[in-house]
Image 1 (cartoon, rainbow, N blue to C red):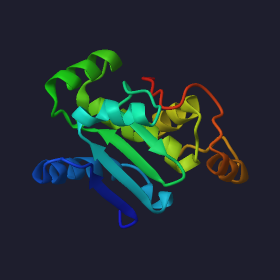
Image 2: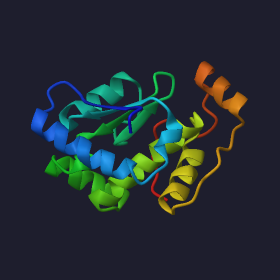
Image 3: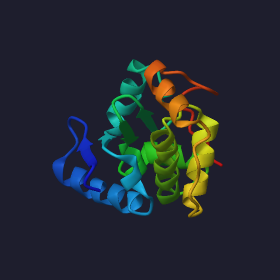
Image 4: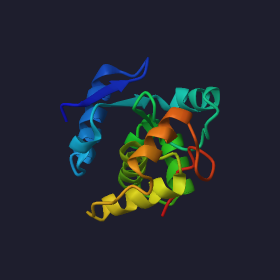
Length: 165
């Protein structure tokens, strides 16, 4: 994980940040992230999540998003089960326990990251295969992925629309 950077957004308590980063690293260790290259992971407080998401014109109900060009993935604090109200909301909305939802969110975002993939359905498929222990292939060619990142092109449904398989 030497190419991975881990941060917590402003206001995140340091002790909790370190604990959550350990949990995130544990999940990432299940996947071949050495092929990802340099990537930054940021955990954002739930109380800031919806505002940040709206400012970026993303779906504030989705607990994770990936920015392809700066090579960054953002995860909401509630995925680590610290905000009882928001955690309950996410569990109900996604019909998943929190450990499974965190795993789903991370593997889905890895679909975006590994493949420079903006398409949500393709990221879902990639993430599902990762969770099954398979070695998924990206749907786009390497050249198309470069163009996808360069143009910010979205080949599919609404951006940041994480779906439960």
